[in-house]
Length: 114
Image (cartoon, rainbow, N blue to C red):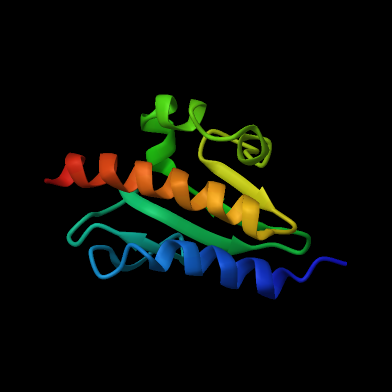
């Protein structure tokens, strides 16, 4: 069985790299990171635990498909929807790929709010 506590902690570790530029928020009660002052669906990332996986929601990825297309195939395989990635496990190579994607997306997100 997957250690979803570890997966969730590793996802937050990858996201925490972008603090304090982003601040805590919520979307439908789900913990998220947002640009200060952003409202509604204009969040950077949200993390939601399910029974068999941990979901990472990146609405910003839907606005920048070129960034997602440049991601490694292993990471793209975790994409389960337009803005959703699902992780049952998250080893260090995959976490590194995710961090690269987040780095590219936060640049775009920053530019949208600059």
